[in-house]
Structures are given as structure tokens and as C-alpha cells.
Amino acid sequence: MAAGFLFVAGAVFFWTGTGIFYRKAGSDGLTLLPLGFLVSALGTAGSFFFTGLDPELFSMLITVVPFILVMAAAGIINQAAMLAASRSMSLGPSSPAWAILQSSMVVPFVYSLLLWGERAGLFQLIGLPLTLAAIVLLSGWSIGMGKAAQSDHKYSAGYRRWLLMVALAFVLNGVQQIFFLIPSHVPAWREVYSARVFIGQAGSTLFFLVLFLFSRQKITRGHVRVALPLTCCVIFGQLVFLLGADILAEGGLSGIAFPFVVVGIILVFTLYSRFILKDTVTIKQWIGVGIGALGILFLSLP
Image (cartoon, rainbow, N blue to C red; front, side, top):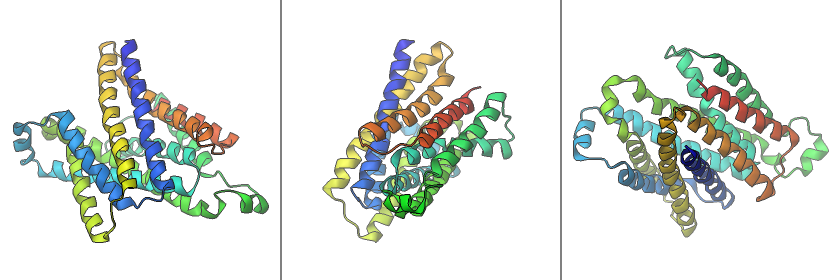
């Protein structure tokens, strides 16, 4: 059982790395379309290798075109969300932006209640207002500052652009989670579930390839230096997470794997921003991170 927790902790390490490298892409001023194409293409190759897609599965995919379209859309929206997050972290504070992005799991939760008719338990009803309160705290980081203080503040001039990018990343990330959950509600697609990640990455690759070619932007060494470790973080994060979740499932604890990872990512990235990047993290932001982590934990409990 201890090995399961170690693998899940490894997923926290790798997936926090995705935030770190997307932040680096934003702070280095890398153009987003080449980055989106590179990460998607490398992700397609990696997911093909690790999921072991066989010829029979490919033949089945031909018969479920709606599944392909939904998963491709999910992959495109997912990468767009990450690029918006990268942009937001170049315009303002990183830790609130990343915490708000992770809090977007409230979007599929509310959607499942309203449109899929799912029921919310006591823990979810507690977790929803906690998570929403955290988003308000984290997104209003400059509200209440005096004009003199705002003029000296490192990020004050770009606050509205920062908030817009954070909101865009939040919405897109929530929507892509809905798209990835749709196959779970379509019994006819169960035989091709294992192709979800591959199809999503492949669809994102084609989409960003077209945009990249029309934009006439160039892939630089900076793009490659960020895309390679970023993709490794994504792939190895998925690998160790699944290993950990499988081990925990043997003891009936698989349900805590996902909330453990999400809360861990928020806390570790916040600590990284504060002590490595030397970003200013206010008391209000620390409270928002704590409330958000608690809210996500409650949302994920049965």
C-alpha cells in the first residue's frame, strides 16, 4: 500500500512539472502555437507507445466517428487551456493562476448535476462553495489595494489581462474535462475507452499543426527545450499515477488517488512559486489555496 502512495506522490511531482514548464514558456515569451503543436505531437507519440494500441482497436475506432470527434475536441480544448494558463502566468502571479486552473473540476461537477442527473452527496455540497470561495479569493488578489500601492505593484498594469487569461484557462479546462467524461456515459464506446488520450493528443496535433502553418511562426530551440521535459512530465505523470491507483485499488483506496494528486499539485506549485521563484504570496492567497485544496478534497470524496 505504501508503494501506491509513493507512485501517486510521484504523479504530483511530474504534474507539478507541467505547471513549471508552462510557466517557463510564458515567462520566456515563447509563441504559443508552435508550443501547442510540439507538446501535442510528442504527447501523441508518447500515448501511442504507452497505451499499446492494437490493430483491432483501430478497426473499431473507424466505426465510432462521434467518439473520435469528441475526444479530438477534448484534446484541442485541453491544450488551449494549458496555453492560456501559460499566458496568464506570464502576466501575473503564478500560484493563484495554477490553483484556479486546478479548481476547474467544479465545472464538470456542476454539469453532471444539471445535465446528467447525477446526485451530490454531503461532501460534494460542502466542497462546491469552498472551491468557489477559493476562486473568488485567488482571483481578487489586487482588489482593495490603494492606487499608490497598485502603481508600484509588479503585476498591477496587467491585472485585467491576467484575470481574462485565468478565466479562459479555467473555463477551457473545465469544458475539456466534460468532453473526456462523455464516453463514460455512452455504453457503446466502452470498447474504445483506452484510445481516449491518444485520440485527444492526435486531434490536438492536427489542429495546432494547421494553425502553426498558417501563422508562419517558427519552432525555436526554446520551444524544444520546454516541450520535451513538459511532455515527459505529462506522460510519466500518467504512468505513475495509474500504477499508484491500481495498487491503492487493491486496498479499496483508489478513490483518494485523484484528490491527493490535485491537492498536492496546488500546494507544491504554490511552495515552488513562493520559495524558488520568490513570488509574493499574500495571506489572502494562502487562505485561498488552503480553502481550494480542501474544497477539491471534499468534491472528490464519495
